[in-house]
Image (cartoon, rainbow, N blue to C red):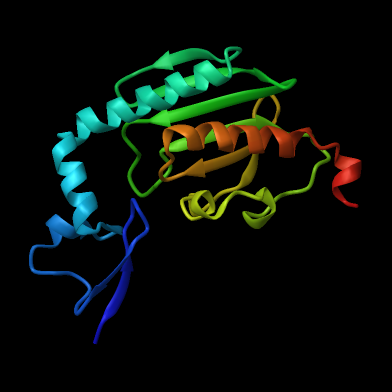
Length: 182
């Protein structure tokens, strides 16, 4: 019997006769699966510590170039945090090099959200299909610290995807609450 698997990076469909080959660490983990071309690309890029640090740096640079009003407020080995105002909304972004146990949240966006605005579902975010597929399992949700936040987290985002996501979330949060119901 053939089992259909999707690559965790390129989303290519891979057919296999059993879910985990004998050397399962070469093809994926218990939470994901990679096609052979993505495995080779990942191996060529070096150890995960170098790859992830470079990825976070590239995404940080892309955000700073597109949104110069964002400031880097925290840099550690595990996290880079940006904060600022975009289109009049307070924004906080966390780019993680390492994730916490039992979570897939690597890219976390907080956008100031009106207190009277309704809770949103993943479909209501209106994200393109490739971005909706990498949403964290518990996103979106609202939280509250100094303001009410629309919190959306992703397992993986490309360099340009972080810009697309932030533009989309700011646009959603900027819609007045009285017009959202119509």
